[in-house]
Image 1 (spheres, helix red, strand yellow):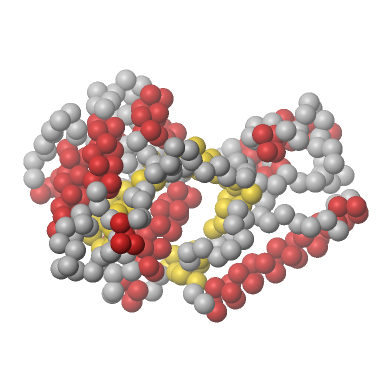
Image 2 (cartoon, rainbow, N blue to C red; image 1 turned 60 degrees about the vertical axis):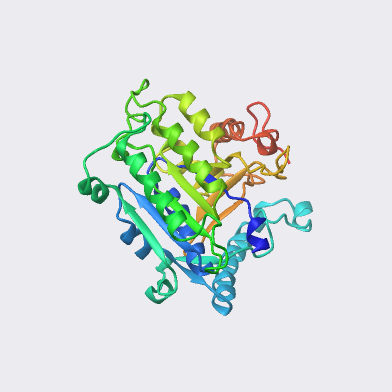
Length: 351
């Protein structure tokens, strides 16, 4: 009981990529971790039925399976490195390599995205669902405190689960303590009845802000953690995004290369998108932890979804034209100070 009192409640806000492919995968990772850890789940969506979301959770890699799968991935990476070894200057080949992942130690669990989670894992886990079309068909629309009907119903459902299942901390002797994992998909979209994505001056401009303010109060006094995905690229009003960021504990943005110029840029050939960490938790502290790198990228391998440090290639092949090298140098300027400082002017990277 004393252990759970020390756990900070986290409200994670994830900016969806353009086609919501990788953000949905990260969303399912959060729920899959809850299943493996035995946490209780609450899944809310206005687009996809929560039952279908839970059926598509990635399969966990446990014990020997985890080592075997990661061993296959590392072998594939080593083969690629051996092919590119001749492109690296000889004096750099003997230097120690920098770890690609932000943390070299195993934390949590790993999952195989090519397989779905076995149904028997859900038998010992209790979960709740909130599907907006079904909820709106039960009762007529209602609007309270300048908040639209969908947000009001969602808050009432979350509050009911927190108090009925004992996550508010009351009656600690009646049942064993557990953690409630809340996942809300594509909040703020027009499917939720909000118009912040369709107009620069929406009518319910404060509806999403008030929802997050009340939700944060519920999370602070309960044993729960929440992840919310928002189509931030569709919200034209920057003031709304600033308010949403301030009300969140952690804000992460996913930028996919699909459909952009970076998809065919040799500079990013090993990655599928960038990870922008806009804000990290600073609970019970006046300052927040500062990461040793700000340049993160993700890639979807055959079986694993990984987030790594973004490394610029040491040099390009002789087949790349001079104009292409200048374009790559300009693209490198878009990175933050960690990698962008290495690209100066219009010349290619000099090592």
